[in-house]
Figure (cartoon, rainbow, N blue to C red):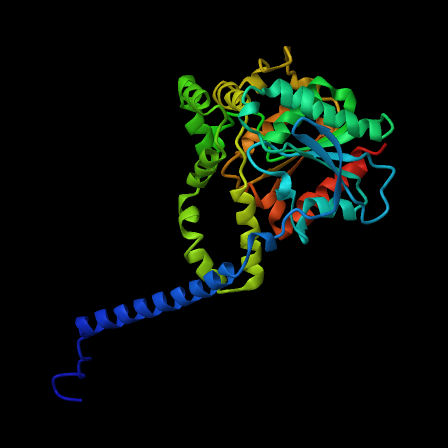
Length: 383
């Protein structure tokens, strides 16, 4: 040690530090690119026909216009003590979501529990369907489908399970024709379309706010111009609600999968479902956007089906209401509002710790959601 004190550390060379950081960044970029290329190579080798979704065996047992009811083949003895369930998805997507793959399938979980399962398929609307309204979809189409399953069940009431917009249809039918149902199950279903903005978490309620601030004339111009509400347009709107996830899933997301076949197969199945987004019949879309999202007529008691105001207090059967706690499309408060209209001893909830689609496709959902649904049927809807 010198008399001047301990030797000083040599000062860091800022140029050398910058070069090291640059080299590290390029190394990470190259590794990320290599992982993405592995995933892209796997995807490029796949064909649409090889990406299987919704292939649980079923027979079409009823048709009316483009709408049909599929009856799924049992995989075990059907439970005679639980009524059949008719599942009703919405018009903004396909019901194939509930049977996306073997190990993540609401349909297959219900079948494995001995539940007799029927599913509504709305078909593919065309411009010929532009004038169909909620009168048609709730009272005529869904009502006819329910009546067929009731008849098959020896005239006894059945369980109706409505999902998203299909849940809103189901709520309306249950309120206007309650004698048809042993129980009403709902998932990610809007009832109060304004919800409780003071309770929204960050990222929740954008769709409600955006549509709610449109003028009725803005909606009318879209419907009058296109006839139907284009599926490509609704798909773009849904993607815009999660912009970063929508931007990065085809690059950073694929790199993270690193060519893993199982992860990429799951990704392709989801993308196939997302891409198959039908147009929404125009007049029904006008009602959905103006009467429900903008004017909130359902909870106000002024929304009519076939000239009759829908009175939610007429729902007098057991109800289970399933919602996603991190749903960026349907805020929790929009779904939970139904509990204000149904007697406490008839009403139950399941809050799933996931997002809008995760209610059906996540591994955890098979136990929490499907398992909870079966448990509710066993306790509340025995025939």
